[in-house]
Length: 256
Image (cartoon, rainbow, N blue to C red; front, top):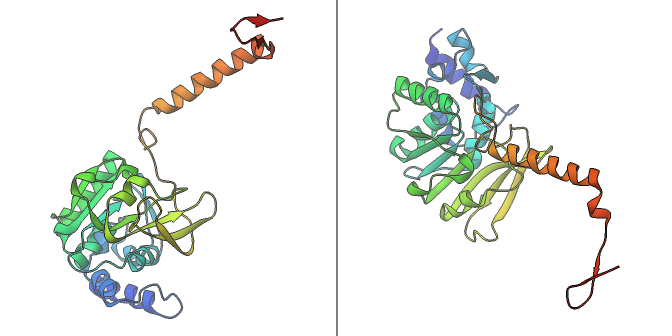
């Protein structure tokens, strides 16, 4: 069976009432164009079009239905400037390139080998114009801001302020929000100090990583510091000095 037929069958199933995750013509047309087998390597090209996720190159490849749900929530239009936080294997940026134009798609990932994999896959599939860089996703890509749309493929407790500040007027950020139970959320950045949010339903994503948490990295300096501070507090508790209360008079002299 030709792979193009498998792509059509995949999108047809995503449009079917039983799933209903693809509803717009733009997302439907884009997913029918992008050769997903160039991005996913399950051992059999045909399996690339199954609605399932994969672990690949140290990152999780989203199932087509999950990717479609994100893309529909993002609601990008032709010509929009888009930032994808979490480049993954490059599939989502490729679909967005079909919608908005590849020169308008920017993607970042905190893990260097994931960035290299995404670049290679995008080039093989014909989307060399998509910009992919190794960055801390929570900080965004300020030199290319503002963005009409920002998509985050990882969960955070709250919308990262740098990302909200990089939205264009009337721009939207789509991100899974929550610790434990998560909700896919649209964040509107008209007022960065007090953004409006719209929950869209329950999801389950890995947490947004910060510097030092990516695969193969050295231990975070922050972790080293926290361990040192905890050890110091434990040492102080053993001496009991914090139990030795001293009352001071108005002139700074200790009163016993």
